[in-house]
Length: 438
Image (cartoon, rainbow, N blue to C red):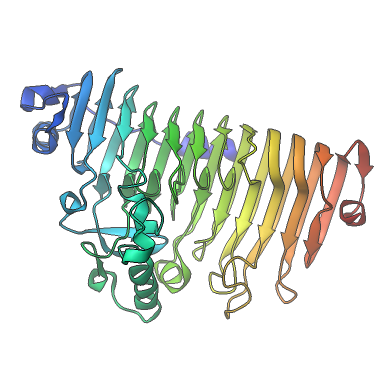
């Protein structure tokens, strides 16, 4: 099936003509505001039917960049787009999704809505300008003690989720200026044929790469390095036919987190994430290597993780599924193959007790988890699987899995059909769950 997904993905078709931003009065001195110059270059390319918008060598300060159809934003080697960390520049509000809920919020740093055939390519750098005094303190941390001053996301986040549960239409959920909800770096919303290739992304306010409701998405050869709060590397949400390959993730949160909407809003939209391939990637620091959830109320199915390396004392989990009785939703048909893990906390985690736990009316469905040909050097635990008594985890299979050194026994509760074939832990064969719990 993975081969069929690869064959079905369409690369963007972009005319072979170039528009260099310096021809539109952009200055690469790191000081001049180039927002309008970049917009003018994109506008000219769009009016000509599309093309490559070239960012040459130099540092170009800018506000938000909005892409049009048939545009490739191409960063040449030695170039940097340095996004100005002034929230007012990311107004007016745009239709976006934040932690799985639709709203009118601050513009993502790079944004495309309803576009076809778009790309961000090249060996340059995208710098979001976030640090302990810009953007990140809105989480409630940092040198300016935003958690004490009230300049943080807490009140708006609670109200946004309440609005969604009570049925306020997304267009009526205004959470831009004064709400302190950090924007994602790159968001393609309702787009087709998307390519993000070779760029380096650093210092993101929030999630780094966030395709939403998009089809035929390729993220290839990208380096993601951002150690701020919620610095997820790549979060495809309610997307179909996605390939993430040859990327490096070194992040302050999940390296890859597949999502499909949160709670009532995720069920209202009702679009799963499906047919997703993660191949030949390297996961370093992060909360999890490849994660599904917790915003998975629309469901996730047909995920293939293959030929990846994961290792860091700061990598908390390898493969993780997180949900609860408010999210519902779930994961079906997860296939993990040929994974090399150095040091990790827990190798495989499926947790129905994330955040609200059993406090909700929905039964998560997680079934068809097939993990094989995995070698791990050091892990705290092999497995941490916790389903509900009334909604157990179903059909988990480990084949040809070796973990050289494990510090603690696994935790396994409410799992129907756990199959272990050729599994070795601490040099000893493991044939049933009792061996893992010993």
